[in-house]
Length: 319
Image 1: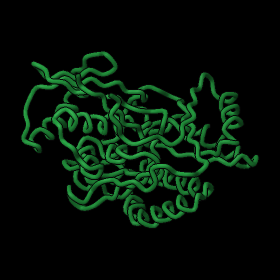
Image 2: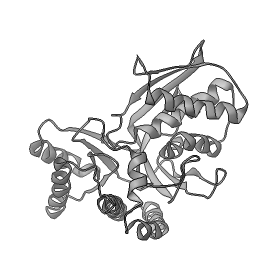
Image 3: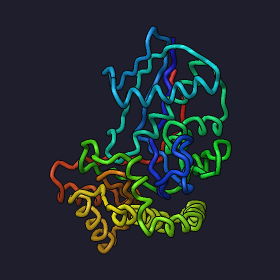
Image 4: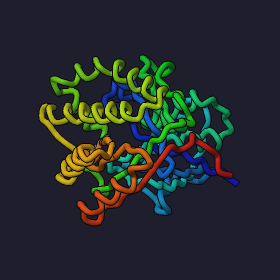
């Protein structure tokens, strides 16, 4: 019986937003993420008479299936193995809405591939493989806080654990303002963002902000973690807005949510936001403030969905 691999999604607090090499998915900057307990992908692979990809019980065709099997064929070639495969995935993450669904999806797929063929890889080796499917997937091999060092080639670009079981009061509220698929993919956005005159200055700050975040995490300094995450997210979206042509993933509700976070801080309820390639906002908070923040957002937004997440574990085999 084939075993199921589970990988949790992660949210970058220091962002990855740009490729140095699209084929190898080598990033232009290093990144740091928080793995989340509430969002994950379960995947199993079995032998088949034809390549099949099933997502949430529905057989897939077109771009999503092509991407999965392009990745798997790359891995088969890398390890000199063959065979038609049936891939069954259940994605407990809203897809393509800025919640890093590909991070858990391709981490779980890489893990299921290795399990199916009997390869016993180290976390670093598995991180390299996951990176070939989706850059952010390299970080979902680990729980807690993970760092993806940009490296300069396939061998040196991988993620590693900073702290898989952090002892810090840090909650992440995922405020789902819009669950429709985004119009501009992350891949397209990353490429277009590099036309901004502020892109290279942002890259130049990457190591400084990364080191500041590492120090804040080691010191269990919630305020600095939150303010750095918010700054880094604003820098990412600033280069999007100033690209040529400019673009944004923000919706009117996104702007309203950003202003609400600022209002809450002025009222003494400490919280910070981060936003990825989508309209949804994620709020960094401490446990004591979760209820007040949730109540305020529920009162200001119609039918908003809020999920309170905390630290999730690294990749695992379920049975």
